[in-house]
Length: 87
Image (cartoon, rainbow, N blue to C red; front, side, top):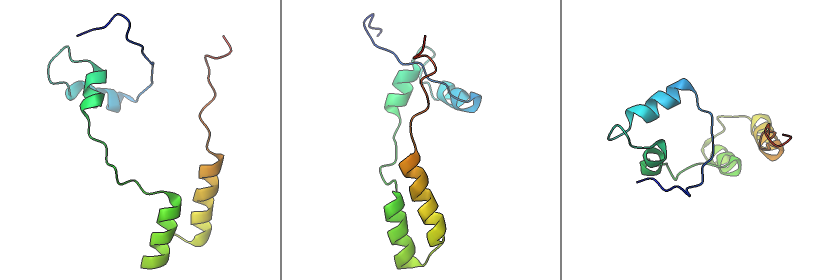
């Protein structure tokens, strides 16, 4: 079912990701949106703070310095520049 008023967002994916999406279609004209919406995403992600707590309780697998660098990088992380915004 296609809706003429459906909003869209263009994304870039690697060829490998495109091929996996294409292979996951249940029928030839199933949209990639339908494939993505059907996907199951793990809910058990770990934040840097949780990783630090795990390292402290179980023994560090990463050093404190490495964990600090991860947290600093997370704070500085920003979305990429909108290359289409200036047009």
